[in-house]
Figure 1 (cartoon, rainbow, N blue to C red):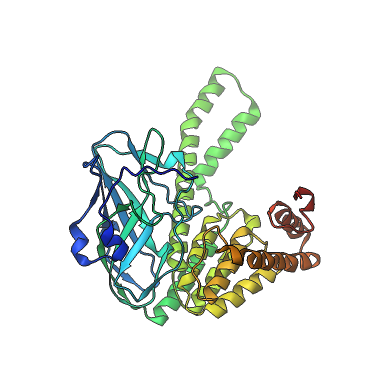
Figure 2: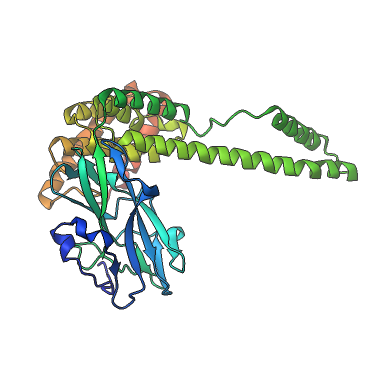
Length: 403
């Protein structure tokens, strides 16, 4: 049973009925702790976007009261928890559920003090804009917590009570087809270039010389005072090399995530092909799986839903690909979207649809099993491991199934 505190009593009638521009100056507060507020702001001041671009706004929490923390987790592995509201009706669709009552990442909890806590919310994860125009967006969130117990102060559920923000106006402009085609090609090149964690930049001449000196010193095993002095002098240079390479790796990952987000929400056929390609990319490289999840989140933005289904089904059947969780999640999402349904989060919908969903999943696994002879030895071994660990009954995990 989920247990929620109802201390954050808010006036949310307007939220249930839709937002209006008159709410721009409003902020949510708690009567018990009126110094606590949450407001919505434009991320980096940006309110102008193009169709298919990632749209981010900031939740800003303020309050001098002690004993409260903010959940700042924005990991794409987590299902979206913030519920986004848009007005007017029309021109947009809700593409994903919001999942409430999620487990907490303790490392992402930030104590609320004298300084505001700002959390970026990628609203494109749950909202797809289909037409250009002016829209007002607001957010309900359960990120505010009691630090002592991590109790949620703002359960969403039916959004009463919840932490409701003001509305922020955004403008969505059309995107030229030629511009999108060029952008897809550019982003694809960037993702290909940064694929694989082993692709570290080459050492400079001076760095190579430092590494060579260290190797020679270690090989010589010179423990004399002079040898120890030489090694001590080399240590700062080693630290500098490690720092530079760590910074380069962090930049590579940040650039890759940004490229993935920019590709995810584009709507044309070339974008669909690129998304499916990278979702199905070989996981043997150890590539970060966050890109796959970001691209799966972006599938609802694609206009050609039937092409999307065909491409994902072909990728699932391809013995050159590994049947990773992200790929099957994409397959399931593509089918739901082709049926004009919202993508479900960790749920197979109403009870009456669960048996059909289970049967469909088992059929997908039968397809994978049928491709085993065509797979390489390494691919086949990893595919069998995938079949063993999943919870859906199949010939490779029967020993783990209980009656």
